[in-house]
Length: 128
Image (cartoon, rainbow, N blue to C red; front, side, top):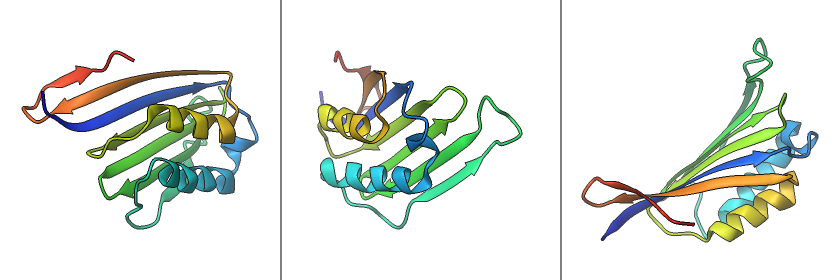
């Protein structure tokens, strides 16, 4: 089986409420994560706080292109949860991702799955 790309989908549960509301902390997390998983940023990140009229959804969204694809995250202020997607054609260490997120957001729990996108178009869930 030839893997074309790896997609890690994470839900960080009950994060530090200050950290997920602080733009500078989120930007530093993104910069550090990219360095820690040996990726290269392409351009500057986009970060916006929006959905303020919907308390269930309000919070920052972060988007960063990397040379091998992208990283996105939404920081849900009401629940103090963070929803992250990392897709890359270059492999990276799942544990480094989790450790970096733990350092910045001090979550209580983390749920994640790995999806492997195959060269033939199939998507296979990794048994983590």
